[in-house]
Image (cartoon, rainbow, N blue to C red; front, side, top):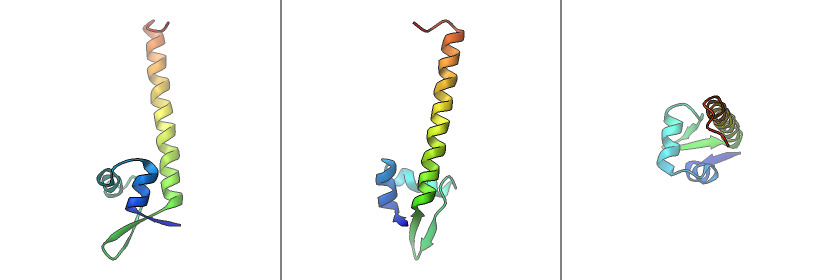
Length: 73
């Protein structure tokens, strides 16, 4: 299923301009139909999975550092 950039930005809950930056940087693949970009739903879902994994990894690293520095309760 192909999505417009408006639909894709709504799913990601980001601004349209931020989504365009993600597309132009190559973080999310897209196709052009005339002047308009189209994003495959499966590519958007893949980006969300990778983003979530990276976020969880960063949170775990912060938690580990806090414990090493005895900053926890």
